[in-house]
Length: 416
Image 1 (tube, rainbow, N blue to C red):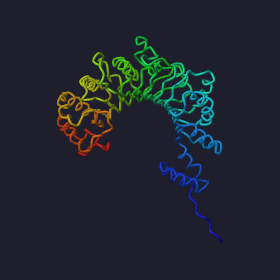
Image 2: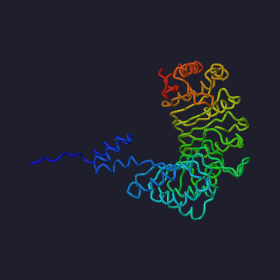
Image 3: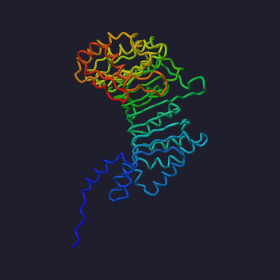
Image 4: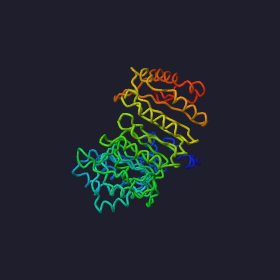
């Protein structure tokens, strides 16, 4: 009598396949080994889809036609429209891409790259209202955003949206002026509950102009921000003071809901000294993580950034803070001279006071190359600069040595 072939419970098979989720070669082999493994392997193989060319779109469409159930596996969709001809981009988006998007109704993260948004037609608006029912994260990168009403319409099409990102997004009518006008006096000083279902809890705004923030201020959405990242500057045609005011309004308006904040201190532009309300954290009692970035010590305006850093640290009221990350940009050849220019006594006292009252708080000081090249400091260079900074923070180094951290060239904290 032939004995039965032993089999593993389906739950164990699923756990084994899940363990291989980052090994595409192994996943493909598993998908061919057993029909019972096919469903689980597809969950990982088709978790993320990137459509960057018309050919990729046609290939993906043929896959879905052969196996329609794959559509329910796609959770992360990236649309890179850089290679689509400008004269056919709008047509391709509407008539071709919308067909496939309607089938991808389980997508949770959507990224759109290199898109010059047209004015939405009524047909496009109607289609938009049906294609993104599950999207929780929406990212725009190197996009010329739609007109305000159209942008709000796109966001309305994502009723579950919580996380919104804009990276290098600018909108202009012409080469010399922006296509929007910011009625500063009319902008609310705090975020107010909206009338739409969408509640945005995370906002990332990097290298983008104020247009997108203006749209959010005037939108019907509730900005219940728990995470906020405002990095680098907006286009130079917008004054630093104006950008600082808008960023501070987001910070203050978030109030007690804000838990993670990463903010560019923008020391490399002028006018910052005209607005002393940036960055004020006294209205954010729930902060857990704080990043104060991009103080260029070799920059002519670094003192303004340093002053903002000191004011920000002095304004902290959150007893829950667990991490403060400070980003310093400097040149290795002159770092000793650059560090000597700064008054370290006040920051040493502020950091020691913050750490004393918060037993979980870690101070992380990032030392990055000031130049625009891709050069990174070596591990040995990082260690030398870290020792120079420690000498300038005697209170921290003496009383709280284990609470001061310097990521090195391998992005790990320097061993003590």
